Amino acid sequence: MNEPFAQKDNEFVAWYPLNLTAEGAKDVWRTRRTGYYVHIPFCTAICDYCGFAVERLKGAPVGSYIEALKLEIRRAADSGRLARHRFVCGHFGGGTPSAIPAADLMAVKRAIDESFDVADDAEVTVEVNPISFSVEKAEAYRDNGVNRISFGVQSFDDRILKTIGRPHRASDVQNTLDVIRNVGFQNFSLDLIYGVPGQSLADLRTDLERAAQCGPTHISCFRLEIIPLTLLKLREAAYQIPARLSVALLDEMDDLVSNILTDAGYSCYGAFNFAKPGFESVHNSVAFVAPQGEYIGFGNSAYSFVDDQIFCNHAEVHAYARAVLGGDSPIALAARVTALESMARYFILGLKFFRVSRSAFVSLYGLEPEQLFGTVLQELEDQGLLVVDGEDYVLTALGRRYVNNVVKRFFVGTSRGRSQYPQFVSNLSVEQISRYADLRAKAEQSALS
Image (cartoon, rainbow, N blue to C red; front, top):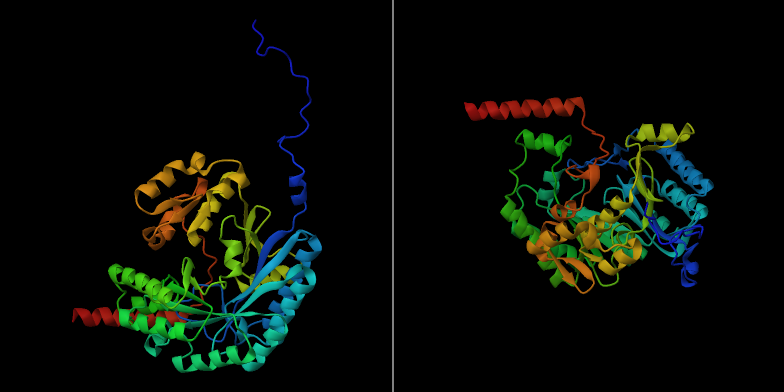
């Protein structure tokens, strides 16, 4: 019988790989660049289009929820799992964080500051709206280290605000802007919604120009999505709002958003996001820009990505609080991200911000991306959706328009063909469902007669 090798190798293999270097030793206990998110689910009024896990403030268990949040934070710290994570940003979202007392919100922030390694210059954002924001709250945020405000304007047109069921009106916007400026917040973002039934290009142009004139450092623009189990969907089904806009008009609106804000000095640095130079969201740079960092979410429905695991808490407020206060974990769903999923994630989230580094991918994973995604990358290039720019893969203008279609081409394994899983708790009442069902029936009967 022929021997399989010329000679037997007696070297004992004790570790692998073998490319250890003195330079690499500096990174062994490197602190991880991390962000945190805190979900505040309470709102003075719930917008008709809202699909988040929220609850009306009136009668809500705010006190027990805040206690549960602080307890979840302390337990995470005591576990030691985040000991090597340095938080470079934090975001209080919802819901409407400004709806609850500033003392409660800042008590949660202090719990984080006292429990974790938070960078002195961490970017900390609080979402606000005109109905619940005040000078007193703004001063409390500023005095406790909040340095960025995210203001949900959505539109400067009362007709548009009424269509989407926002509780404020355009006249309230200036008061909120005055508070932001007078209290000293230099860094603030505005949210706009467009593609609203009944909205014209001229309406959108006015909204964009007025938003830019307000002087925010950052503007996020979102196309309206009418999702099931929301009041806006019920109103649409009952013919209580104008017809949806055509795809052609929506595409024109996409272009208008980009053109107006670019001309106003904003750079489109990621899907929906425009910033003045140097004011790109730090949270986005952690969660999306490839290679992505890690983030931890606290509160109901909050998602996290830590130690190659993605997990999310109970969506329903009472289920979350009951679990934490009862001594149990609030995590409802979780999965460990495989090596292949991690490499896919690099492109899926990275391309949401238009550019991924090929050389960084090779350095991180030891593989060339073409070995795994060569067919997809070539097809996207052939379709004019992606180009190679030096060492980077970059979305074209066409690719940006179809960014969600593009990134889903990188889905692997059991994620292929699946939709984003929504942690959604409907706030519709039986009375609302019944009322709009009656209105729909009457409208259809009237059309037949």
